[in-house]
Length: 305
Ligand code: NAD
Ligand code: KPL
Image (cartoon, rainbow, N blue to C red; front, side, top):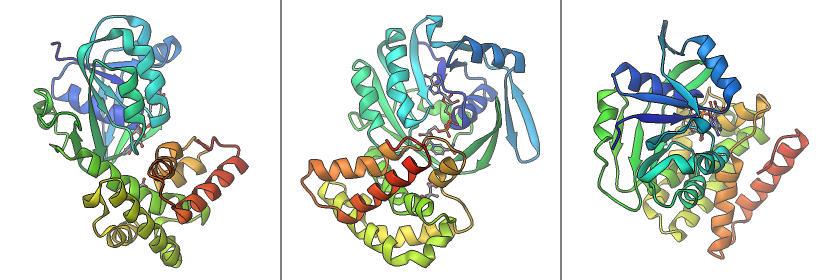
């Protein structure tokens, strides 16, 4: 097996991971959207990672999906709605037993990817690290956090997992990655849509705690119904703790909407509503929230799925 990390998507998280892997001497190769992006990247001379007041340039080799050559390990670092089409385009290059590391927030995109790459091992990740693009090929490491990785189909960590520690990427292998992803999904559903609808920072939700509590209660019931009792435990308290701890921040969905970017709603609130429907469970608060959010996005001319 080749030890090269192919990294699909040189956006915020993809660049953050690529730069740290390259800095640690790990073989990394970026996969960019098309020949035009590749040319622009080559002109820039590499990726720049900004950490506090330090800027470091990493001349990581790059290619496009069409470049050819086998892929043994792929970090999928695009948005949830781009993941399945990106993997479909790369499928002919994936060797049997290739490892895919899926950094997407929310749930649903992981299964879409797995369908398109049935011979690959899909490792799911849940990240609380924060990064954003200051400009093309310039990414700021904005928030130290942690990464949990796991494979719902196989509790054994892959041999390359030690690369992460060696590259200074804080990570732990967990056999219960689905519980982590559901918990984060529930937090995002209780907070992010309301910040868009009330046009406020996370702390602004302290003025709407009745709404937040009603959503948390319904989300916890749904998690238990979906076989995720751990993810449901004391959800209400954690939602309020996160609101307080991030009171001055704008949620990621709020930032996407404000910047006119497509949101990942289909894999967040959309996934929750679909899961409830599959289980024949009524979730009127969540359904109503979803409808209000969809209407709000449509009114702004943004995709609602
Ligand atoms: P981003 O938009 O900054 O980067 C995604 C990149 O993928 C873009 O550069 C895009 O052009 C590229 N891309 C899309 N399709 C592609 C394709 N077919 N081929 C090549 N490149 C392609 O997104 P991000 O903020 O890095 O988020 C990635 C995922 O990580 C999301 O699901 C997000 O919710 C999650 N996440 C992000 C952060 C963060 O701080 N940015 C934190 C936690 C989780
Ligand atoms: O993850 C978040 C986000 O903004 O996406 C928090 C801060 C937890 C709010 O849901």
